[in-house]
Length: 348
Image (tube, rainbow, N blue to C red; front, side):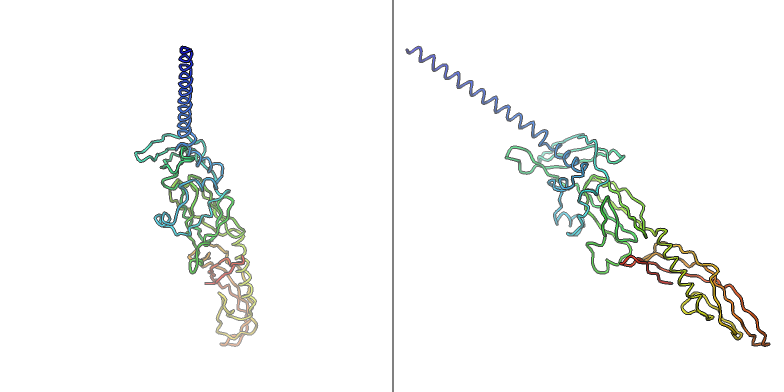
């Protein structure tokens, strides 16, 4: 009986040892799996890859809410930006192209626990390499790594909306005066900063019946500040409409049966006695050309020719004759687009 109990105790100890060994194996496997997860899915490289993939997929909501992307008021001030800087570009449908074919080139751990992750990717037709500093934040469930950007990758794009306050980027049309007030609203050229997801390529342009700006691609680098000018120029329709107004104005001038039509660019003085109503006609209308000025689209002094025909009696000998003469003149003007979409011209 004593021998039997000894063998039972030995079996129990062996079973306990086996369970302990199994527990150690399971714990080791768990820790190994946890370590693998923290090196891969929850690693610093994967954090950067997910951010870049969100941009490529036009998931701007995910990209912009990635930890470390948003800028607080102090960070905006450090960048020289107002607290109400426009975030209008932080939405879907604005990015022209995001980072594709992403490859992690290196992931270097720093002494403070942060990592410098260098990624290579294709951005439109260019191959770009960028480094991102990321640092650990409170872990998930106390065991899975979480990260944030130490420096926000958001770009600042300074948009110069030349000669027209509105512009188009992607599928979005923005008014560069949206955050402005007072005298700034009247400026012919507006300069406005916008926060933009980066790295990404954007295309800025504008097109309407009266104005058109040639599309300009902009490659916005992570944490970079990039300028772009959207240069709105008059369309042929704009020039044609101004031409119609000029033609109408000069036609009305010619309809005045006087030697010096009031507020008109042509006229004549005759020393002899006028014996009939003067008849004016326009031989050659000034051809309108428009270029941007400081506050309007300007037409430089441009020549036209008017013709006068009037019967006259000589004060010297009393004989009658017809006075006929071509009278060159010039017209200069400033044209602006009114809030209701019409064109106002001001003669100079």
